[in-house]
Image 1 (cartoon, one colour):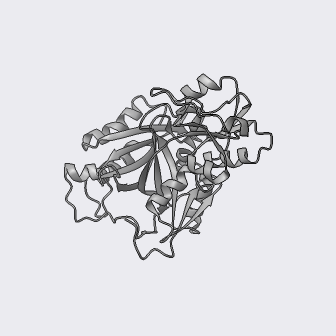
Image 2 (spheres, one colour):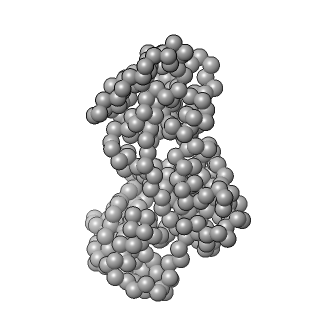
Image 3 (cartoon, helix red, strand yellow):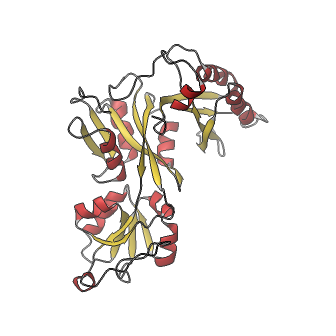
Length: 327
Protein backbone atom coordinates (compact mmCIF):
# COMPACT_ATOMS: atom_id res chain seq x y z
CA UNK A 1 0.00 0.00 0.00
CA UNK A 2 1.26 3.47 -0.81
CA UNK A 3 2.41 5.64 2.08
CA UNK A 4 0.36 8.77 2.73
CA UNK A 5 3.50 10.83 3.36
CA UNK A 6 4.68 10.48 -0.21
CA UNK A 7 3.64 13.76 -1.85
CA UNK A 8 7.24 14.69 -2.58
CA UNK A 9 8.15 11.37 -4.18
CA UNK A 10 8.66 11.35 -7.93
CA UNK A 11 8.51 8.04 -9.76
CA UNK A 12 9.77 7.53 -13.33
CA UNK A 13 8.37 4.95 -15.75
CA UNK A 14 8.87 3.86 -19.36
CA UNK A 15 6.38 6.00 -21.27
CA UNK A 16 4.55 7.47 -22.95
CA UNK A 17 1.38 7.56 -20.87
CA UNK A 18 -0.90 4.51 -21.27
CA UNK A 19 2.13 2.23 -21.75
CA UNK A 20 1.94 -1.05 -19.87
CA UNK A 21 4.70 0.25 -17.60
CA UNK A 22 2.54 3.31 -16.92
CA UNK A 23 -0.35 1.04 -15.96
CA UNK A 24 1.96 -0.97 -13.68
CA UNK A 25 3.27 2.22 -12.05
CA UNK A 26 -0.26 3.49 -11.38
CA UNK A 27 -1.15 0.22 -9.66
CA UNK A 28 1.56 0.86 -7.05
CA UNK A 29 1.95 4.64 -7.11
CA UNK A 30 -1.45 6.39 -7.34
CA UNK A 31 -1.31 9.87 -8.84
CA UNK A 32 -3.15 11.26 -5.82
CA UNK A 33 -0.05 10.53 -3.74
CA UNK A 34 2.87 10.47 -6.18
CA UNK A 35 4.14 12.44 -9.11
CA UNK A 36 4.82 9.92 -11.85
CA UNK A 37 6.78 11.03 -14.90
CA UNK A 38 7.24 9.25 -18.25
CA UNK A 39 10.67 8.56 -19.74
CA UNK A 40 11.46 7.80 -23.37
CA UNK A 41 13.61 4.69 -22.79
CA UNK A 42 14.37 2.19 -20.04
CA UNK A 43 17.87 3.70 -19.87
CA UNK A 44 16.30 7.09 -19.16
CA UNK A 45 14.47 5.59 -16.16
CA UNK A 46 17.75 4.20 -14.81
CA UNK A 47 19.47 7.55 -15.41
CA UNK A 48 16.75 9.45 -13.57
CA UNK A 49 16.99 7.14 -10.55
CA UNK A 50 20.79 7.14 -10.52
CA UNK A 51 20.96 10.94 -10.72
CA UNK A 52 18.48 11.33 -7.87
CA UNK A 53 16.05 13.41 -9.94
CA UNK A 54 13.39 10.81 -9.07
CA UNK A 55 13.06 8.65 -5.99
CA UNK A 56 12.07 5.42 -7.74
CA UNK A 57 11.55 3.98 -11.20
CA UNK A 58 9.41 1.28 -12.79
CA UNK A 59 10.84 -0.82 -15.64
CA UNK A 60 9.74 -4.02 -17.40
CA UNK A 61 11.84 -7.05 -16.52
CA UNK A 62 10.25 -10.16 -18.03
CA UNK A 63 7.17 -11.46 -19.76
CA UNK A 64 5.57 -14.80 -18.94
CA UNK A 65 5.50 -15.94 -22.57
CA UNK A 66 8.39 -14.06 -24.20
CA UNK A 67 11.06 -14.04 -21.51
CA UNK A 68 13.41 -11.38 -20.20
CA UNK A 69 13.66 -7.79 -21.38
CA UNK A 70 17.28 -7.68 -22.50
CA UNK A 71 17.50 -3.88 -22.36
CA UNK A 72 16.77 -4.01 -18.63
CA UNK A 73 19.26 -6.83 -18.06
CA UNK A 74 21.97 -4.86 -19.87
CA UNK A 75 21.34 -1.86 -17.64
CA UNK A 76 21.71 -4.06 -14.55
CA UNK A 77 24.93 -5.45 -16.03
CA UNK A 78 26.13 -1.82 -16.09
CA UNK A 79 29.31 -2.51 -18.03
CA UNK A 80 30.10 1.21 -18.25
CA UNK A 81 29.48 1.80 -14.53
CA UNK A 82 26.71 4.31 -15.24
CA UNK A 83 24.25 2.94 -12.65
CA UNK A 84 26.38 1.69 -9.74
CA UNK A 85 23.87 2.62 -7.04
CA UNK A 86 20.68 1.09 -8.43
CA UNK A 87 18.99 -1.87 -6.77
CA UNK A 88 15.60 -3.58 -7.03
CA UNK A 89 13.22 -2.81 -4.15
CA UNK A 90 9.92 -4.22 -5.41
CA UNK A 91 8.02 -5.94 -8.20
CA UNK A 92 4.66 -5.59 -9.93
CA UNK A 93 2.80 -8.19 -11.99
CA UNK A 94 0.44 -6.91 -14.68
CA UNK A 95 -1.83 -8.96 -16.97
CA UNK A 96 -1.09 -8.05 -20.59
CA UNK A 97 -3.87 -8.07 -23.19
CA UNK A 98 -2.77 -6.85 -26.60
CA UNK A 99 -5.00 -5.19 -29.16
CA UNK A 100 -4.55 -4.50 -32.86
CA UNK A 101 -5.22 -0.78 -33.23
CA UNK A 102 -5.58 1.27 -36.39
CA UNK A 103 -7.83 3.30 -38.63
CA UNK A 104 -11.26 1.89 -39.46
CA UNK A 105 -13.08 3.30 -42.48
CA UNK A 106 -16.63 4.55 -41.96
CA UNK A 107 -17.91 1.93 -44.37
CA UNK A 108 -16.21 -0.86 -42.48
CA UNK A 109 -17.15 0.55 -39.10
CA UNK A 110 -20.81 0.47 -40.05
CA UNK A 111 -20.61 -3.27 -40.57
CA UNK A 112 -21.24 -5.67 -37.74
CA UNK A 113 -18.02 -6.67 -36.02
CA UNK A 114 -16.65 -10.14 -36.69
CA UNK A 115 -16.91 -12.31 -33.62
CA UNK A 116 -13.80 -13.94 -32.22
CA UNK A 117 -13.22 -17.65 -32.12
CA UNK A 118 -13.11 -19.07 -28.61
CA UNK A 119 -9.73 -20.62 -29.32
CA UNK A 120 -8.00 -18.01 -31.48
CA UNK A 121 -8.24 -14.26 -31.96
CA UNK A 122 -9.47 -12.99 -35.31
CA UNK A 123 -9.51 -9.49 -36.80
CA UNK A 124 -12.65 -7.52 -35.93
CA UNK A 125 -12.50 -5.51 -39.18
CA UNK A 126 -10.98 -5.72 -42.63
CA UNK A 127 -7.16 -5.50 -42.41
CA UNK A 128 -6.22 -5.71 -46.09
CA UNK A 129 -5.17 -2.06 -46.09
CA UNK A 130 -2.51 -2.60 -43.38
CA UNK A 131 1.02 -2.46 -44.84
CA UNK A 132 3.12 -2.03 -41.68
CA UNK A 133 2.89 -2.66 -37.96
CA UNK A 134 4.39 -0.77 -35.01
CA UNK A 135 5.06 -2.15 -31.53
CA UNK A 136 7.61 -2.81 -28.84
CA UNK A 137 9.85 -5.75 -29.74
CA UNK A 138 8.51 -7.86 -26.85
CA UNK A 139 4.97 -7.73 -28.24
CA UNK A 140 5.87 -9.54 -31.48
CA UNK A 141 6.74 -12.74 -29.63
CA UNK A 142 3.68 -12.52 -27.41
CA UNK A 143 1.36 -12.33 -30.46
CA UNK A 144 3.24 -14.65 -32.81
CA UNK A 145 0.29 -16.88 -33.75
CA UNK A 146 -1.95 -13.96 -34.67
CA UNK A 147 0.81 -12.23 -36.65
CA UNK A 148 1.80 -15.39 -38.50
CA UNK A 149 -1.82 -16.07 -39.44
CA UNK A 150 -2.86 -12.60 -40.58
CA UNK A 151 0.27 -10.52 -41.18
CA UNK A 152 2.84 -12.80 -42.76
CA UNK A 153 5.30 -10.70 -44.77
CA UNK A 154 4.01 -7.37 -43.39
CA UNK A 155 6.73 -4.95 -42.24
CA UNK A 156 7.23 -4.75 -38.47
CA UNK A 157 8.78 -1.64 -36.94
CA UNK A 158 10.19 -1.68 -33.40
CA UNK A 159 9.50 1.38 -31.22
CA UNK A 160 10.30 2.25 -27.61
CA UNK A 161 6.92 1.15 -26.21
CA UNK A 162 3.51 -0.12 -27.27
CA UNK A 163 1.93 3.24 -26.42
CA UNK A 164 4.46 4.98 -28.70
CA UNK A 165 3.29 2.63 -31.43
CA UNK A 166 -0.29 3.85 -30.95
CA UNK A 167 0.86 7.45 -31.08
CA UNK A 168 2.67 6.90 -34.38
CA UNK A 169 -0.29 5.15 -35.96
CA UNK A 170 -2.60 7.97 -34.90
CA UNK A 171 -0.34 10.37 -36.82
CA UNK A 172 -0.34 8.25 -39.99
CA UNK A 173 -2.59 10.10 -42.43
CA UNK A 174 -2.49 7.23 -44.93
CA UNK A 175 -4.33 4.94 -42.52
CA UNK A 176 -2.27 1.96 -43.67
CA UNK A 177 -0.42 1.25 -40.42
CA UNK A 178 -1.52 -0.48 -37.24
CA UNK A 179 -0.16 -0.90 -33.72
CA UNK A 180 -0.02 -3.74 -31.24
CA UNK A 181 -0.80 -1.95 -28.03
CA UNK A 182 -3.25 -1.66 -25.15
CA UNK A 183 -6.89 -0.71 -25.38
CA UNK A 184 -6.14 2.24 -23.09
CA UNK A 185 -3.64 3.58 -25.62
CA UNK A 186 -6.17 3.13 -28.43
CA UNK A 187 -8.74 5.13 -26.51
CA UNK A 188 -6.25 7.92 -25.82
CA UNK A 189 -5.19 8.26 -29.45
CA UNK A 190 -8.62 7.68 -30.97
CA UNK A 191 -7.75 4.47 -32.81
CA UNK A 192 -10.13 1.79 -33.96
CA UNK A 193 -10.13 -1.66 -32.39
CA UNK A 194 -9.10 -4.02 -35.20
CA UNK A 195 -8.39 -6.98 -32.94
CA UNK A 196 -8.64 -7.77 -29.25
CA UNK A 197 -6.81 -10.16 -26.92
CA UNK A 198 -4.46 -11.19 -29.72
CA UNK A 199 -1.76 -12.54 -27.38
CA UNK A 200 -0.95 -16.22 -27.85
CA UNK A 201 -1.20 -17.41 -24.27
CA UNK A 202 -3.92 -17.11 -21.67
CA UNK A 203 -2.50 -15.57 -18.53
CA UNK A 204 0.03 -13.49 -20.46
CA UNK A 205 1.61 -11.13 -17.93
CA UNK A 206 4.68 -8.98 -17.44
CA UNK A 207 6.72 -8.50 -14.29
CA UNK A 208 8.05 -5.01 -13.61
CA UNK A 209 10.81 -4.04 -11.20
CA UNK A 210 10.72 -1.03 -8.92
CA UNK A 211 14.23 0.38 -8.67
CA UNK A 212 15.85 2.92 -6.36
CA UNK A 213 19.26 4.09 -5.24
CA UNK A 214 20.89 2.07 -2.47
CA UNK A 215 20.93 5.13 -0.21
CA UNK A 216 17.23 5.94 -0.74
CA UNK A 217 15.10 4.03 1.78
CA UNK A 218 11.73 4.80 0.20
CA UNK A 219 8.70 4.89 2.48
CA UNK A 220 6.65 3.06 -0.16
CA UNK A 221 8.38 -0.28 0.26
CA UNK A 222 8.16 -2.39 3.38
CA UNK A 223 11.57 -2.29 5.12
CA UNK A 224 13.38 -5.60 5.32
CA UNK A 225 14.23 -5.78 9.01
CA UNK A 226 16.03 -8.34 11.13
CA UNK A 227 12.92 -8.98 13.22
CA UNK A 228 11.55 -11.79 11.06
CA UNK A 229 13.15 -15.15 11.79
CA UNK A 230 14.75 -16.94 8.84
CA UNK A 231 12.39 -19.81 8.08
CA UNK A 232 11.20 -21.51 4.90
CA UNK A 233 8.14 -19.27 4.96
CA UNK A 234 10.33 -16.19 5.35
CA UNK A 235 12.47 -17.30 2.41
CA UNK A 236 9.39 -17.62 0.22
CA UNK A 237 8.34 -14.11 1.19
CA UNK A 238 11.38 -12.48 -0.41
CA UNK A 239 13.45 -12.53 -3.60
CA UNK A 240 17.02 -11.44 -4.35
CA UNK A 241 18.79 -10.60 -7.62
CA UNK A 242 22.53 -11.24 -7.97
CA UNK A 243 24.93 -10.87 -10.88
CA UNK A 244 28.35 -12.49 -11.27
CA UNK A 245 31.08 -13.32 -13.77
CA UNK A 246 33.31 -16.39 -13.96
CA UNK A 247 36.68 -17.32 -15.36
CA UNK A 248 35.65 -18.76 -18.72
CA UNK A 249 38.87 -20.71 -19.06
CA UNK A 250 38.36 -22.63 -15.84
CA UNK A 251 36.36 -25.88 -16.18
CA UNK A 252 33.35 -25.97 -13.90
CA UNK A 253 33.58 -22.29 -12.94
CA UNK A 254 29.88 -21.66 -13.53
CA UNK A 255 28.86 -24.89 -11.81
CA UNK A 256 30.98 -23.92 -8.81
CA UNK A 257 29.13 -20.63 -8.48
CA UNK A 258 25.72 -22.25 -8.73
CA UNK A 259 26.73 -24.86 -6.15
CA UNK A 260 27.06 -22.08 -3.59
CA UNK A 261 23.32 -21.50 -3.67
CA UNK A 262 22.61 -25.21 -3.33
CA UNK A 263 24.94 -25.39 -0.34
CA UNK A 264 22.87 -22.80 1.50
CA UNK A 265 19.56 -24.35 0.35
CA UNK A 266 18.58 -21.34 -1.72
CA UNK A 267 16.02 -21.95 -4.47
CA UNK A 268 17.10 -20.33 -7.74
CA UNK A 269 14.02 -19.24 -9.68
CA UNK A 270 15.70 -17.87 -12.82
CA UNK A 271 19.07 -17.66 -14.57
CA UNK A 272 19.96 -15.21 -17.35
CA UNK A 273 23.13 -14.24 -19.15
CA UNK A 274 24.26 -11.26 -21.21
CA UNK A 275 27.55 -10.60 -23.05
CA UNK A 276 30.20 -9.01 -20.88
CA UNK A 277 32.90 -6.58 -21.97
CA UNK A 278 35.77 -8.89 -21.01
CA UNK A 279 36.09 -10.70 -24.35
CA UNK A 280 33.98 -12.12 -27.15
CA UNK A 281 31.70 -14.94 -25.93
CA UNK A 282 32.25 -14.05 -22.29
CA UNK A 283 29.14 -13.47 -20.18
CA UNK A 284 27.74 -11.91 -17.07
CA UNK A 285 25.22 -14.13 -15.29
CA UNK A 286 22.10 -13.12 -13.35
CA UNK A 287 20.42 -15.37 -10.81
CA UNK A 288 17.26 -14.76 -8.88
CA UNK A 289 16.84 -16.64 -5.63
CA UNK A 290 14.22 -16.88 -2.94
CA UNK A 291 15.28 -15.24 0.30
CA UNK A 292 16.79 -11.89 1.16
CA UNK A 293 19.98 -10.16 2.15
CA UNK A 294 19.59 -9.35 5.83
CA UNK A 295 20.77 -6.04 7.30
CA UNK A 296 22.41 -7.90 10.22
CA UNK A 297 24.76 -9.75 7.85
CA UNK A 298 23.39 -13.13 8.85
CA UNK A 299 21.31 -15.71 7.01
CA UNK A 300 21.54 -17.92 3.93
CA UNK A 301 21.63 -15.19 1.28
CA UNK A 302 24.29 -13.22 3.14
CA UNK A 303 26.40 -16.34 3.59
CA UNK A 304 25.97 -17.30 -0.07
CA UNK A 305 27.05 -13.81 -1.17
CA UNK A 306 30.17 -14.04 0.97
CA UNK A 307 31.14 -17.43 -0.44
CA UNK A 308 30.26 -16.40 -4.00
CA UNK A 309 32.76 -13.56 -3.68
CA UNK A 310 35.47 -16.18 -3.23
CA UNK A 311 34.35 -18.40 -6.13
CA UNK A 312 33.18 -15.99 -8.82
CA UNK A 313 35.44 -13.64 -10.72
CA UNK A 314 33.17 -10.79 -9.61
CA UNK A 315 29.73 -10.59 -8.02
CA UNK A 316 27.16 -7.96 -7.13
CA UNK A 317 24.00 -7.87 -5.02
CA UNK A 318 21.27 -6.10 -7.02
CA UNK A 319 18.56 -5.95 -4.40
CA UNK A 320 16.13 -7.88 -2.20
CA UNK A 321 12.38 -7.28 -2.13
CA UNK A 322 9.06 -8.76 -1.10
CA UNK A 323 7.69 -11.48 -3.35
CA UNK A 324 4.55 -9.89 -4.85
CA UNK A 325 2.98 -13.31 -5.36
CA UNK A 326 3.31 -14.06 -1.65
CA UNK A 327 2.53 -10.61 -0.26
